[in-house]
Length: 400
Image (cartoon, rainbow, N blue to C red):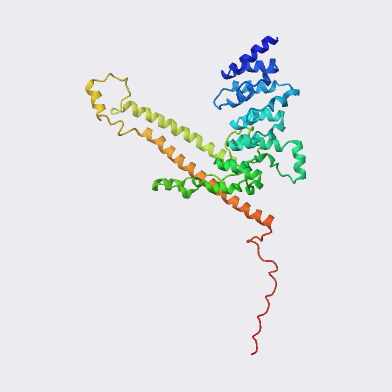
C-alpha cells in the first residue's frame, strides 16, 4: 500500500502537467498525502496548479473534477489543506479570485469563510486580489459572502452596519479602490465606492488618495481624445448608461436572468411590443429571403459561383500586375463589419469617459462631505442662520 502511494505521488506531477484531472481527483480521494504534497518549485499543491490553469473556454468536466477534489477533503483537515500557501503566500482561494473563477471561489468560501481574510506575503486578501485583477463578479461574491457571515453581522450591528474594511488594504497602504482605478476597472471602482464609501478618502504610504490615481489617468477623459469630424458626430450621437450599484451582490451572480433586463413596470410594454413586432419581423424576413432567391436565380450579370478553373499563364500575369480589381474594390460585405466595429470602439471610448467623469464627480462630492464632517468647515450651500435678525442701524455722523 505504501509503495503504491509513493508511485502515485511520483506520477502526480505528471498528471497535473498533462491536465488529467480525473486521475488527480482519484488520487485526492484515495491518498491523504496527495492533498498535502507540494509538486512545484514554487511550493504549489495539485489544487494550486489546478486552479491556476483555469480558462473560461475549457469544458465543464474540468470544473467538475476540481470541485470534486475540494469536496473529497475530509472535514477535520479541510481548513489545513485549503489554507496551504505557495512561495508567494497565495492559497487556492487567492488563485481562484485572481482568475475570476466564481464556482471555485464559492466552493471554497462556503466551506471555510475565514479563508477570505487570509493574507499573502504582500498582505493581500482574496478580496483584494479580485479587485486588483479587475474580476468584478468574483469581488462581488467574496464581498457579499464575507459580510453575510453571522459573526460578521454581529460586528456590523455594533458598528452601525458598516462593512469590514480591514480586508481592503495591503501593506503599502493601497486599497482596493486604488487598485481598481489604477487598472482602469471603472465599473468595479464604482461598486467599491458604493460598498466602502470611506475608502474614497483613504491614502497609501505615499499620501496618495484614489482621486490622485484617477487624476493621473488622462486617457480616461474626453479632453485627451481627438476625433475626426465624422467620429465626433458619432461620439455625440451614441448613448451610454450611467454606473449603478449592484442591488443584490450575493445573489445576482447565481440567479439566471431570463428575458430583458428592465424594470418590472416596463415588461408589459415590451410584451405588447413583441406581440406586434415579431410577426411583422418574421414576415419581412421571409419576404426578403424569397426576393433574394428569385433575384439570384434570374441574375445574368452575377451567375452562381462555379468551381475554380485552372488559370493560364496570361491570366496569372495580369492578376500579378494589377489586372484584377478585387483588391482595389473590396465587396461591401467586408466594409460593413468594419463600420460597426468602428462605432463600437467610439461607444466604448465614450463609456469610459462618462464613467471616469462620474467617478470623479462623486469623489469630489465625497471629499466635500468628509471635510465638513471631520474638520468642522461650514458647507457653502447652507443658508446663514438667524436670518430674521434686523441689521444694526447706521453709525450717526460725528459732530465736529
